[in-house]
Amino acid sequence: MGIKPFRGWSRSRAPRSVLLAVVFGLVGGCGFQLAGSGRLPAAMQATYLDSTEPRSEFYSSLSEALRHSGLELVDSRGDADARLVISEDSTGQRVLSVTARNIPREYEIFYSVTFSLEAQGEALIQPEVLVARRNYTYDETEVLGKEREESLLRRALADDLARQVMRRIEALSRTPPPG
Image (cartoon, rainbow, N blue to C red):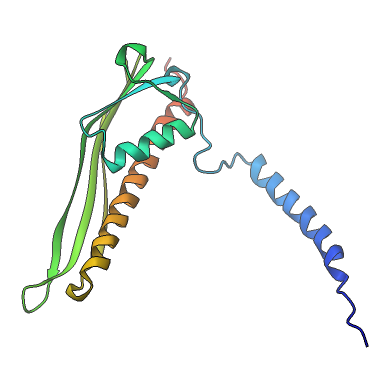
């Protein structure tokens, strides 16, 4: 009485492959694009990222996103075709609620950036402010864990803002020229 291998696996795989191919074909045909697959303006091939906080989490996230999209980030303003200006890059937190003993119970963490984009002496994006916020609870018995949670939330907010800036820049490529 030997155990026979299951042979139905290969037969069930073929219909799944065909179904997946059809689904991807339909989704691709309707213009759907995965996040991050947009095009950036051609005028940004060599971009200078101008920031007052070059060591911030947002700067790091945005630099990574720009490089991932195929842009060359240059170190000198004179070598750049475009200049992405981060004029504000700040983060903080505030207490949302306290316990009866006046111990903070819930915090709101926020991240705020102001950015603009110039290319060939022309303002492509006027200064825009983006703010991201998240709430988290605080437990004084888990101080180290909550500090780590706050750090992770701050990084997630910076990543989210970088994606928003990238989407805003990608929208320039989809906008028809005026006139």
